Image (cartoon, rainbow, N blue to C red; front, side):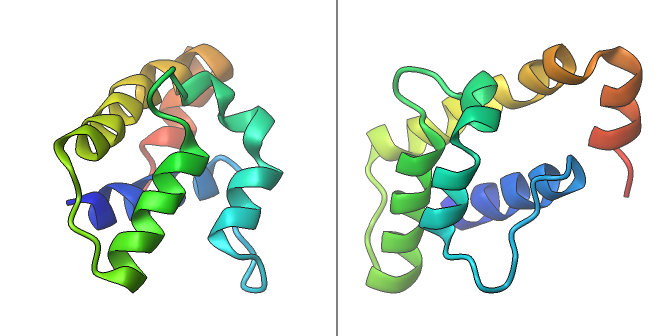
Length: 99
C-alpha cells in the first residue's frame, strides 16, 4: 500500500508541475521540492520521510510499521485540502483531477 501511495503522490505532483526528471533520485526530488511540499506535510508526515520509507520498502524489503503507514495516511489526508488551498478552487479541479 505504501508503494501505491507514493506513486500516487508522484503522479499527482507531476501534474502540478513538480515532475521528477529521470536523472534525479527520489531523495533529491524530495529535497528539491521541500518548500512546495510543505502545505501537504504535517508534524509526522514529511515527504522526505515518506520517501525514505518508500525506498526502504522497495529496495530493502522493509516491513512498514503502523506508525509509518499512519504517516502516509496523514499526508494523503492533507494532500487534497493542501492542493485546493495552494491552487484555488478552479485550478485545483483542473489540475488535480484530470486523467
